Image (cartoon, rainbow, N blue to C red; front, side):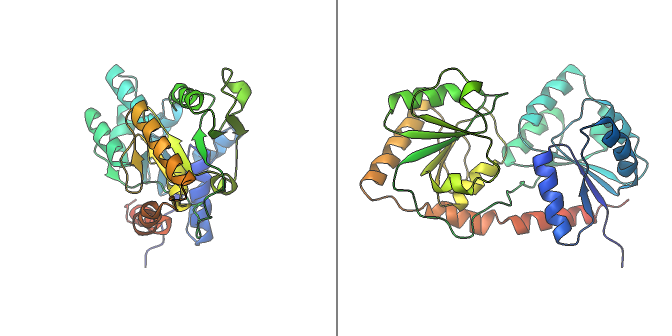
Length: 303
């Protein structure tokens, strides 16, 4: 019987360390390789060359690492495209500022169907395998007694994540509380008074229990961890992308109307848990099945 392939995961620490830990707990030969210091980079080069599979989460690397990987004498490179990395790649390929050998040598995976379609613009054909959160609810908590909305805003891409839309909605619905995760109030222009900033939250389960719905009004997105986590909590999700169990909103007017509807049903006592979302997570987005499929794919890659 052939041995399992050794897998080294690089880039995007949150995803990489989580997936490596999951596979290690199952006795699989996988490790996350931090490249956050000169020492780690030197040590990492040796491990990268010894690994059967180098799994990069986050698309093209623009630095020296892509050159080194393109010369890798053993094993394969797998690129898993997640979201904005696709937009970066489209721009880089059109500008010619990318390592073509590295790109052509890699096996490509896409975290969502729409990302796979976008990659075709630059001649990349990727198999769709979502990265699904491992922090899902087994038993969804009841809806809170107060109607609240959850929003994710970063410090580096606040407009990308819809800050102006959220500010406008909060100003027009002053009686609704918005919980903001991912950044602090001082990271943004003065917000409406009904926005409560929670900063970076490591364990989101307590936050999900306090809200009725998640708003993710993004300009571009991948297969969001937060969307699946919120669905597993039985919460409603208003997202710019179509997905079973999600309320798709393509404009500000749609978003506001859906929030008004949810709030009315909540106050009238007619809003229960999001049963469609719970069913979708249970039947279609089971993390055990996704990560088993992903690992098996690596294990069949020939050295």
